[in-house]
Structures are given as structure tokens and as C-alpha cells.
Image (tube, rainbow, N blue to C red; front, side):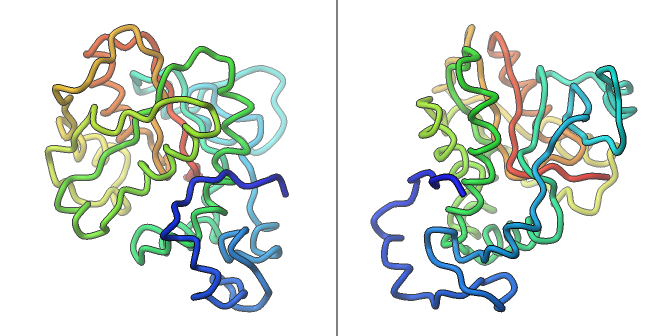
Length: 247
């Protein structure tokens, strides 16, 4: 396993004293802080997104293809991002890890999550002229409940790896929209319509922006953020998420 990105702070350095060196997902194998307390067997069950996949949204395709393709979702939709990619497939292990991270404030798992994100994203995004990163924001009410924004923390890890600034205060979520989890594609698009807005700090003119979020399903949320950035004058916008859901 490649070296993990250093994106934790001093307050998290004592986790090794607080948590036993066992996998916190399966509780059946040893795992230490350097791997986010996720064991080797659990990590081995995670699959990276590999070609062939949709050239627009990164949806993996089962089987062999000799030419680039777009999925039916992208043929029917017009997205404001150049392309969207996820680092790993949102299988059971990844979903379990994200659930603990987001809803149980399991920050100890971040080294593992950030490794999955950065190890796949950095080789693709490096030297492509991207100028900064914008995390998908949480509504203030949701942020107070969780005490952190998972997209922001993951964006900082990617920003450190790429040497790019993270513009955390450019976009706000002005509507406390319900969770997208149980919504279909059309419902997701309606749910986030008008949910995001630019702040006075946003200065996106001619910028090449990477939007970062934890998981991509239909692209509705990241498209809504990309719309705001493009209206601000961004030159290019792409999306990179930790996980890619396979519908």
C-alpha cells in the first residue's frame, strides 16, 4: 500500500492510544491507525474504478468496449461539468466506512478514505491545469449536526496531494434538502435545484475547478454546484468523488 496522505491534525494523533488495533469494520483482523483501522482483508475487497466507463460521469461498464461511450443517463442529461469520476466502487466496505465517517464522526477512518481518493485521483488530475478545489457544502443545520463536512476534509487531502488551494467558502448550501439516498434520478435533480449559491468570496473567473464530494450517484448534486461555478465564469469544472455508486 502506498504512503497515506498526511491530512490529519494533532488532535487526531492520539487515536492510536484510544482505539484497539483491530479493524473497525469487520472486527476480525488487526489494523492500525496508519490504515484508518481498516484491516487488510477489508481493504482488499475494495475495487477501484477502471475502464471501460462512461466518458462523462464515470459509470463503470461491465464487459469489453473498443470505443469510448456515454451512458444512457448522460445522453439524456446536460451536465455543466467536463467529466466526473469516482476513485472506488461504492461497495459494501466503502459504504460502511463512509457511513461511520459521516454519521458517527469516525474521523479515525479518514487515512483509509483519503488514500482511496488520492491514489486514484492524483495521477489523473496532476499537471492538467486545475487551479483549485471546491468541496460540495453542507447546509449549516446539517453541518452543526455532524460537526464537520466530509467533502471538505476529503478535498483538503486531495488539495495537499496536488498542491492546490481548497476554496471552502465559495459555495453555500442555502436549502436544507432531504437526503438523496432514497430518491430516483429525476427526484434527485428536483431536490437540489436552486439549493446552492455563490458567496461574496467566490472568484471563479477563468478558474479550472475540481468539485469534490464523497459519493457520486446520478451527478445531480455536483451538477448543481458546477452550474453555480460556471455562472461565476469558471473556465473548466470537473468532479472527483471518493466513491462511485453503480446503479
